[in-house]
Length: 112
Image (cartoon, rainbow, N blue to C red; front, side, top):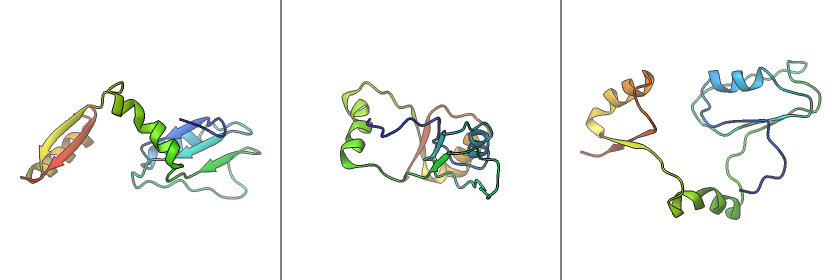
């Protein structure tokens, strides 16, 4: 993956707790990239808690070559992704397991 600059912290979850945790210890000149779309919020005010020259980015997509670099390890088999399949009719139970931390990896809901 090609990065234009170093990122101090990247949040791939995006619920309310994770960006707050990542933003709690910024350094001058640092950057926080919020990638996850978990429905959380990070309120930033001026003046606020962010140090001088701190960058906050909300990248949605990179370039096409960057996307190819990101998925290449998965395509080559070098990256193993754990998935748990669950029927769509059992979605409430799957969400309960996720909330309770009872799932390793991701849950994929499959139509019955």
